[in-house]
Image 1 (spheres, rainbow, N blue to C red):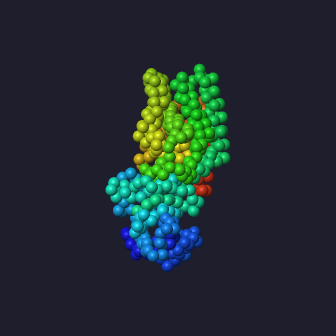
Image 2: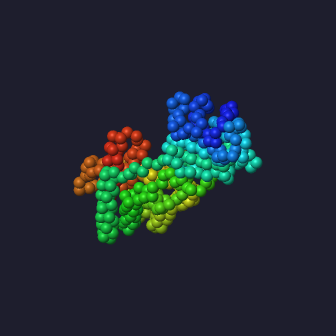
Image 3: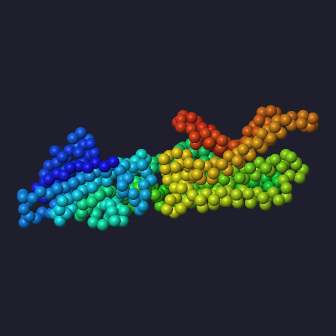
Length: 450
């Protein structure tokens, strides 16, 4: 949409022009030599564009006997200014103001100040003062400089043409603490229990099968490493900087300023993903081991079980993490792989909606769902076997039903099925329900090692 304004004639060397919109342009409010800072729109709304055209102050020129025409056009969008150098990814309002002078030799400079409107969830980061070059059909910066101004974006050019300010925005992140006292206490108790369990398993390894000790020690090792990384590394130690206006007038490549990777957050995210996946990989291997013991009590698991377990337990999660990093991570855009607020896998798109292309789904949730389904099916089989034991078998004393139920519940916790509660913790929006589920989840994971 183009709005053309009539020409106005002035006989002063300095003109202050104030505009606020297409329908509220008020020529009668323009004062010769007036202070632009004191101007306001006719509707009383705040001014969002100040245009200051300065003419040369030459005492030898006869200003009283000549007319100077100045034309101004305000474009409500940039449909006529399609740039290949500057890409627009955000739904921002892009206006262009055009100024013309009847005698360009009289021009000293043109200054304009605007207040960029922040889009939802983002704030302005940097800007460039530009004009439209019709010959190359591209934005240029020659003859324009940007000036630091607390009132807004301030530009100064030594010619009249189609002016614009190319603003880059950065997402406005909220760095809230991911850990609360429930998480810290639960993880700390889990670490203590895991260390004690691993030490006990190693000291008493001669009293049980070697495979059982190996599986439980590896589970304890993975979980301990994960909890330590979670406590000390889940919060991003390097916060994203706010507005960083550079002195150089350089055209940004996009209106969305990407965050260059810095700090250990990406490495911590990869380690968290890896050790959490290895924990569940060793859980399903432990479930498979118990399955072989029940089905074949005399011979137990196959001879190659140890080799297969080490390969699957440590190798399969490494493959998943490697695929996640190679397909979504880049140094210029680390947020394709991880989040900015926390050192964890990315799950949302730029609009805040769940994105199935992000690694949270196929790099964690889907593999975890497969493992949980496998362990759940084996739990049903184990529970049926425990509770429906052959009553014709002779024993000095029967097994109480209470002990059978407790054994099934303990096995469910060992197999990592308490993470089903963790799914509900992630998706719930009710604060009361979130606290209840968090307590249950932490208690279940704390008792996983006992």
